[in-house]
Every structure is written in C-alpha cells, then in structure tokens.
Length: 368
Image (cartoon, rainbow, N blue to C red; front, top):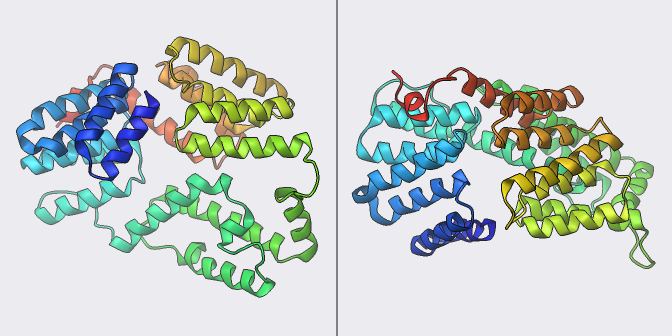
C-alpha cells in the first residue's frame, strides 16, 4: 500500500495523473483504512476530469477526512475544488480548517490571501516573502535533527574558519529574532529561534579547532580500519531515518533492526524501530499497533527522558482514536522537550476535535 502511494505521489509531481490514479486505487485496495489514500485519489480524479467529476472527487476526499479529520492537504484539496466551483464560502472554511490543522500552513495562508483579494473576509494579508520564510523555517525544522553542523551552516567539511564565520553571520541576518519578518505566527518565531540556537551551537563548535576535531571524529569515523558496533549502529540508524522520511518503511524497519542489534542499549534506536513498525506493510493495524507499542515501551524502560518515545506513542494512540491516552503522551513529550513542536501541534488538533465532540465532519465544515 505504501509503495503504491509513494508511486502515486511521484506520478502527481510529474503530472501523470492517469498513472497516479491507478497507483492510489492499488494503495486503497491493499489498505482500505488509510484516509490519505482516498484524499489523494479524489484530488487526482479532479485533476483528470475537472469540474465534471468534482462531486465524485469531493466525496472521495471527504471519505478520507472521515477516517482522519486532520489531513491538512485534504482540506486544501477541497478548498481548491470549491474555489474553482465558485463556492467561496466553503472554500474559505476548508482553507481555514487547514490552518487549524497546521497554523503554519503557508499554502492555506496564500489561498486565503487570494480569496481576500477576490472579496470577502480573510486574515490580514502576509507578503509573499513572509510566506516564503514560513516555508523555509518549516522545512529546516523538519530536517534539523538529521543535519550535521556543516550542513546546517551550508559549508563543506574542508571549510576554513573564515568561511564558517561568513556562513554563520549570513544566517544571523535571516534567523536572529531582531531580523524576523513582521506578522509571523508565534509558533514560527519559536521555530526560527530554535534554528538560530542550533546554528549558533554549530558555529561555536566549528569555530573552535579542538572542538571541531572532536566533533568530526564523532560523526565522520575513519574508514581505514574496522568499524566498531556503535559506529555501525549509528550509520544504520541514520539510514533508517532517511528511509522513514521517504516513506520506505520496510527499508527503515530493516535499518532500525540492525541498529538495535548492534547497539541494543540505545533507546532512541528502539523507539524509531517501534514507530517504523506501526507503518509495516502487509500487516493488520492491530498487529502493527501491538508490535510498535512493545518496542516503544522497551525504549521507555531503557531511557524515560526521550521525547520521541512519547511522541510516537501519542501518534499510535491517536490513530487508534484513543485521544485521552494520546494527549497524555504528547504532554509527556513536551515535558521532556518544551521545543517539541509536533507534540504542540498534535495537542492543538486534539483540542479542536474536542471542541466539537458531537459534530460530524460535515457539521464542522458547514457551520455558520
């Protein structure tokens, strides 16, 4: 299912909509309980047939939203279709709901700005450069954990002290609190602050010859001798994270298993293995859920300070529609890492759902 979904997304990017439609249909056939598959199928139906198939496309996207009301891109899809139909009121509601799902959704902000220009109420307009900055911040935060100091500053391993200094101060002009654009959401300001803090730490390390040598040895082990198990485990773990990000879950599981085998006391590796197992292809959800929780609980037993363990447990219980338990885990994640932005975002989604405990999705979308 996941492989077909990934193929479908790739076909959409190439505008090969007929192939994308077939791939999303295959994904649904393999896993009929995944809302994002229906949302993408509906959007591709609209891209293939336009307004003549708009009602069918809307029905498929709404089916996906009934499975998961917080698919921000599904709301974006619906907003765009209703906008094309001339139903500005419903388009606005869906774009606003996308913003409630993700307060930093730059595309929803852009769409609402366009609606404002067409007439009617909308939030104050953000300049295009501010929207571009929001995208930049979100992209960086998403990849922050995977970037080493050199990548974060945009320099090579061979960079001189002067090159490192210039790169850092170039970024200071963008991400320092005094240089941020006006009108940014508070959450984006906090994310920019975390990026600036990480960049400053990177600069402090790379600008100090002794600290730089120690750091380079830790992340770039020598290749002219046998690697120890801890180093091999770290490499497997890094490969697993790359596979996870590209939604190649089977490869991610394989890499995380190897990392755990080589360094069985590392709780982070165990936690990521558990999370990847919750996406294992070809297994019913209940089996995936139980296996994932077993590994996440094992990770928590080894080290109860990791925010990722609680974040992943929250994700699994949320998907299982156990919002009370999910909320507890997201709060535990924030307690261990107050800058765990995704935990904050998930808590906002749960709050939104609880604000309308007896409403259907249709009620929420059409409320006056």
